[in-house]
Image 1 (cartoon, rainbow, N blue to C red):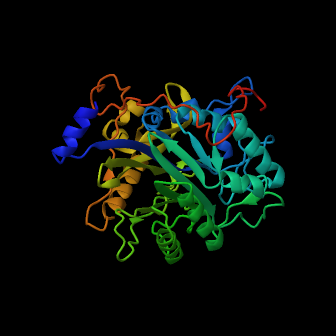
Image 2: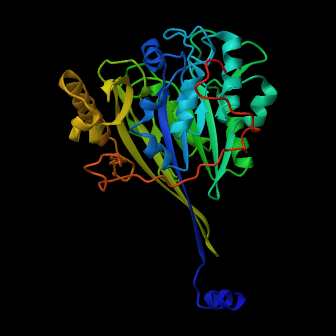
Image 3: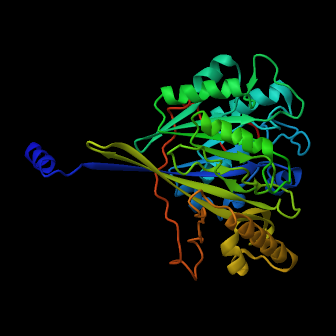
Amino acid sequence: MKRILILILLLGSTIVQAQTLRIIFAGDLMSHMPQVNAAKQADGSYDYAPCFRYVKDYLQSADLAIVNLEVPLAGKPYSGYPQFSAPDALAAYAKEAGFDIMTTANNHCMDRGKKGLERTLFALDSLGIPHLGTYRDRQQRDTEHPLMVERNGIRLALLTYTYGTNGIPAVEPNIVNLIDTTEMARDLRVARAKGADFVVTLIHWGIEYAVKANKEQERTARWLLEHGCDAVVGGHPHVIQNFTLDAISGNDRYPEVVIYSMGNLVSNQRNENCDGGIMVELTLQKTLCVGEGIGLEQEWQYLPYWVHRGTVDSIYQYYIVPSTDAVAHPESYQIQGDLLKALQLFDQNTRERLEACTLKNGDNITEHLFYRNTLPIRTKVGGVVPLRGNPLLNKMLQEKPKKDTKSKKK
């Protein structure tokens, strides 16, 4: 082998090692009371599996999938808006569907006060779900944030912050990551010091129901990029907002993508633009060339989906359905009448809005044309095959015993 290596170098060739990491980001995972009631079973347990039925294969095809848990897991009595508490089963089934990491820094994280914040952390730990954004104390915060994930030879740093907590402050020693430039600058330095190849800030911001980002969001995004963040992915407005770049003059990093809002992953909100969202897919490729150093390329796509509040195969539930496929084949999702019109309107609005957003070289972020590989008449069309064994991210949290996802109390 040494002789082969020497021969290659003498010929002036380079040895290339390429590693790839594919990440899916999703928006706000909500739990209004009609959703809780739809998931409740006769024995008092909660089953959210149907909710993720149509996107489970897509989520599990990624190396890493991340979602914003917009509700506390504060125990009974369960409640919806304005002060949420969701069954633990919501997070458990989201994990089963393929989500690996959950962010908890959002305006509803303090809805049930100190007890709710701490019980949420305990529940996520018990379910083996790494999380970031809220903490029991400063020591935990400094130890676990930024959240460092190493997968496929690529080291990813995840940071997260929220604009506020609906006027309910965290009670010492608890900590909620708020948008604060002093804290964010320190976290970005720590991420680089820990050897991050790529830094993503997951941020909760903006004006609810506004389909375009405001100036404050733009300023904050630009500040993050200027201080070492590679990409910004946002949520909170409950609608899909625009993409942008806020490119920094003279910066050779490309692209510097800012996703201002992905909309809802699932909720009971049914107004126009609130009844769906997008998942954003980032593929990183790290290349090591002898004599040329390390290069990191990135490719972005988005998957639009709509929330079908209805009955499929005699089960009433909130189904996350890929909107492109559902518009083309509504019968496969048993969508008709006014529901079909709402689906078509969402799909049209989303496509028009996002096709108008371009990168700084003029290209669009492309749509991921996902089709379910479970449709019996179209099994060969765009089927997504799971690529990972998806081992637990035990680098993040010490493994704790997992609990039965259908138990009444966790």
